[in-house]
Length: 126
Image (cartoon, rainbow, N blue to C red; front, side):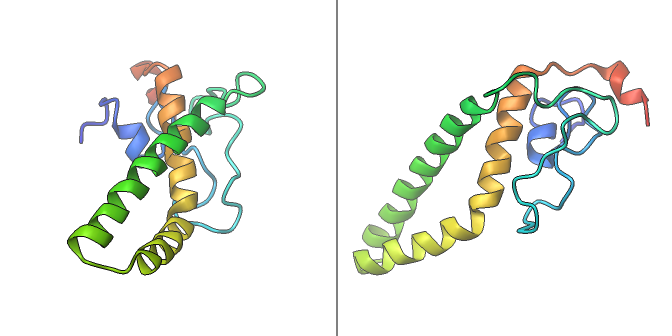
């Protein structure tokens, strides 16, 4: 994936403005400080919290992604794999519990990439 791509900062959890600074101080699947996010980009200084309530849009993205994933998962588990619905829902709860932090961070990365424009000159700092 090219570093100048719009998807690069989303998939790699990098600053959408410079594509170098990390959005989060801990690793992707970290359950230690899972919701802590840098206030500014460590590389270019972009503000990750431009206004109160900025990430409400990310909440809707997370809701949509998790809703479609849950429907898809249950359709595959119950119809294709012929699992008991209780087993399908139970396994879905386990899977969603494991991937909750990743989904939270992914939705925020998408929302931030929608609202911040890539500036190649910002990536020169390091």
